Length: 168
Length: 105
Image 1 (cartoon, rainbow over the protein chains, first blue to last red):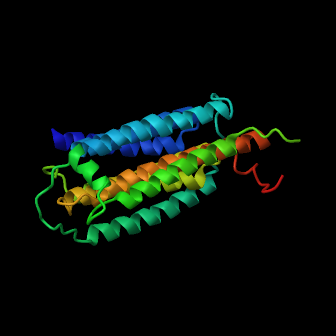
Image 2 (tube, rainbow over the protein chains, first blue to last red):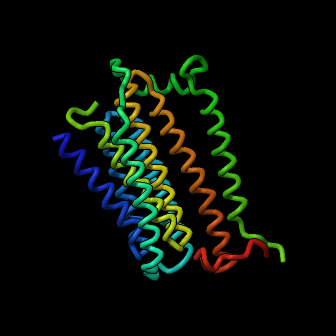
Image 3 (cartoon, rainbow over the protein chains, first blue to last red):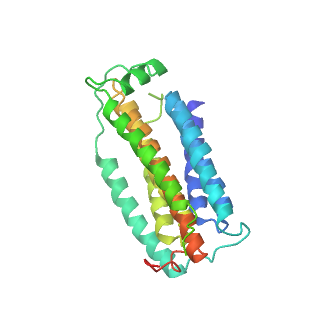
């Protein structure tokens, strides 16, 4: 059952990613992106990283996609269809992407991935919170503080950039 | 660890998603769809981090926390990018990258 669900989610992710970058209607592309991100959240749930899956759902699917949909509604008509990509350019890009995909897949299929074989730690909210605010070994207090400053700076910057300029 | 699913399948899914994102990044002509392709790329990297964490180093949580930080940075990046896109739309009344070719005003 889990195996079937994994391959179903993998198919959903790949199909909706491809539809998201090829769809000619921008709002549909945003909805396909939402489905690809939901498939990723389902994979995190299968791996039993529940906190990460919840963050993926709320921040990516709930936050970023809604932000993108809002900006689509603010910057143009939704029923507008894109020009199809020129065949020559699409083929050239497809060739470049195919070569990159081939090289990458060849490399990772040849590489032997060897784990350290230790028992898995339990991932619950207590462990996550303690690791985030731990300043000893395997602690993440510094990146946690830096990311909070980055988020504040991004928020202020976004407001300043998007503000209407009154001069002239 | 998920029973019966090898690590390589996760990495193959993430790799295909990454290159689909790159295809969209190179062929799209609308700034918002380019931003959506970037989100696909970042998301595929997250899958890789989490799969490596789960299968190779299950006693630590390095990949898990890297993914959380990447999601936070993606949120900040999307907010700033959309502010820039709205400003561009206000100035040029288009967000097509071929029509926005003026770095001065």
